[in-house]
Image (cartoon, rainbow, N blue to C red; front, side, top):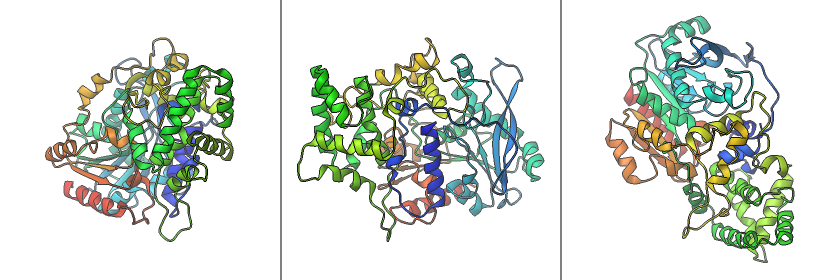
Length: 495
């Protein structure tokens, strides 16, 4: 699928490169945009093979930990790097969350840096229903029922309990009760790191969570507010959106069609799909933003975006249309398949990571990035509602999946912004739209978490989403190096 493939490529680029990149080709973490780009990827079957010098291993994981399938199992992909391991050292576990497990993290990224610095072992675990770790034969609605947060957390716990025998058999190294386990992750997998520390304090000694949106929300309008704060041309974009909404409200189909064509989105029949498509470039430019490396000739992605609104004639809607049309043209996007909200609903083939994440958002998380209510400034159309984003859930997964989960249940169970955990390092970039759902969303929230159990909260004013987690370790600007020193110091103090 385009979303999962591009996000993985983006992460692997950052792990291997010192240069900056115009990241406009990479898609945002928006649940509806993941859903809207559901396309079959090349099918893969689990098999042992080498990725560089690191082999894939497969753990016999329970299909359901709550009795629906007894002791039936599926193959869950695992990577192990014990090159820096000192007997008795810490074991860092990174569940890859909503993207396939990648061996790139065995040799770069913050979990690798921590393991190398502390004589630790690094284990990467693929999340069920992602990559090649599927417990079912297809992705029809009924077959998705084993994809729950509860099963995902139990996957981690069951693996840790089984790890001594599995690791010894796989790589010949010995771990046991004397080893301290540290959960790591970024974004959704950062949530998992915090939650397993909370739910299984007997198994996990500490955790490191980057950009973890712990407050689960079905009306995440604050995302748009952070995008607006990050873009110096935000008011121009807002002006364009207000004009566009007036055009859509008019019901003049000829006028609406002419503007859809101007944006390069004439293939979209739904006005809401058209409005939703306009969030793509803005969101991922900010979410994955980083300034160009010092001394490089790379363009600044935010400056490049805003340059469209600094032309000699100042017509915000026309500028927005020209920018979007160029974005679609340059990235060879097919609007009908990329932005139609129900595109791919009937495709139940395996290996669609975007479909898996959409199911999780439909059934448990929401995270719908809706337009802010008045009088807040909007950079997305009022037609981008949580209802529009959740409506296709039934087409994808059946009538029982409404797309409006009762998130208060999980927030109450897991604590939301106050997870009541100890020995956790929380890291956030303040340019990250997801920070509004994190412990860094408010100084008072951060203070309460730091006061509880020796937790550490680290913020980077110019960084964005999981920048500290996967960013090239040779970059030492805009606060990443300072954050990483503090992360390592905190982990060492926990140990």
